[in-house]
Length: 84
Image (cartoon, rainbow, N blue to C red):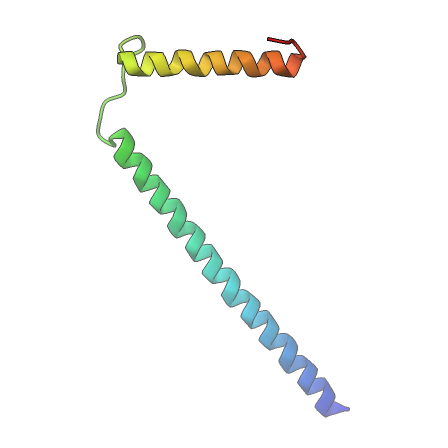
């Protein structure tokens, strides 16, 4: 009976240790991925660039903003059940 109990305890402790290792590896990978995305956004936005003043955006950004507003308007119309 004692040998069975020791076997079950060994299996349980080994399982918990394995689960802990997998969890730690997953968390480490998640943090690495988040750091990578943070660096990509920093590179794309220019970490040291000054924030643009409202109304002085480039023509491309204004066109993109108008396009996004139009898409939102269409999605709201679809959600409201209005046929375009």
